[in-house]
Image 1: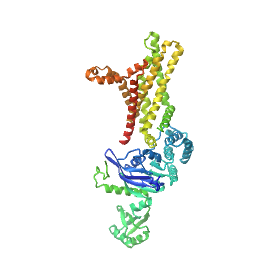
Image 2: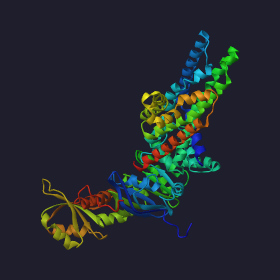
Image 3: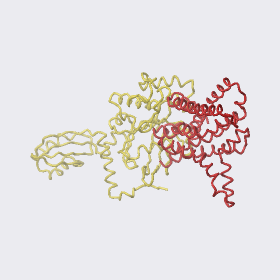
Image 4: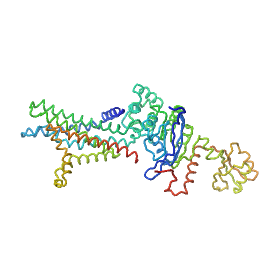
Length: 337
Length: 253
């Protein structure tokens, strides 16, 4: 392999459309080796389609995808040896035993017979499946089935693991196990997971990629994303008084202060506001003093800790707003052959 | 073809652990035994011209119509319905290997079921002690015919299964295609409108594809390479179409 190693996943101007509908529109991103990346997006954003293209299961309309330097379109066999894939809804055969299934999949993934037995034991141990190894998959509960899917994906120790919603339908305890499992792969394997459970992504992933309508709307570490999408620091304020004069007062405290959201005044005249600033330092005290000096009545002031959820909502809303003026039948997409 | 044996042994194993295989096998043997008893009864009433093997194998289309769709309707339709085809095709296996593995497993089961009917003839031999009842020519010819025609019939079943994700639809499609080949070919061969001179090439083609006349040749001990070619090329065609069908469904999914 050439030195410097090519990145684990390289996606360049990927386009995929189904029957006139563009699912993935000009998507480009890169994932470094050993990185755990979270793939976020609302339903129908193109997450599953992108993952299927990454595995070589679906062909793309245009653009290139490279897994560890191998093109998915021209070297599908090489790519299939480099990935472990767990599809959406985790399809499993109903009438096989867990260990039988793993043995069969191991053989298909070209693990030598000699190594397969110990490796299956290892994977069963990792995924906490030892107790059900002789059970029939069709009779397992959702949590176990999900873990069988994960065990299958990591079975051949591929350098790239692609999992489409691995934690869906798991209870909090099982989510914890899966999270530890994925964290245990850090550094050794490149993992790409899609999920709706945002705190999950935040805790496990090094980097987050938010896509909407088939394009990347935000990417970076959870902390960087928060800063980019929501401003540096956010405050919540419940106040009554001269609301119209508030922006000027905020400007006086710190020039980058702005009101990002304002509610309706309630019966007693109090308004809930959300404020954001570009700076990282604390502005609670000067703000409070300025408000009191101007005879505002303050009920609450707090420094907000935006979650990834807020970032996700803000980022996807932002693209929604951006695409609203366009007529819906003309998605602003890249080249479609 | 590295994974063909893995896939084949997996498929056979799944067939062997599945109760439906045993139910189908029992029903098949019961049905064939019923036919065989009927044939023997007619021999006790009056002397017959043909040997029992000829009469027995001439009913081949009855089990083919029911057994082949039942054996094959699951194979690709079920994979697609469950979505396991996605995990299967993202391992280093090719579509060709998957289709051939499933086809071979179904064919092996089909031939094994027919092979079990050899027991009828063994019982007849050990109880009747009448060598006239057991003419080895038609017997061997009949089994060769079953094995060769089975190649095509099972391939048609696999093709039908690749067309739909619904097992019932796949089964009915297989039934209709087999009926069109076996009964429809015979009907066309007898149809008057094809006898006109203009349609002579079409008539020749229909005559070539007569499954019943192939059967007659085989049981007379004539193993014609043209017949073999008909079944082998038909099998290859049906399997290639199955592979294309699976792949086309991915591209246009």
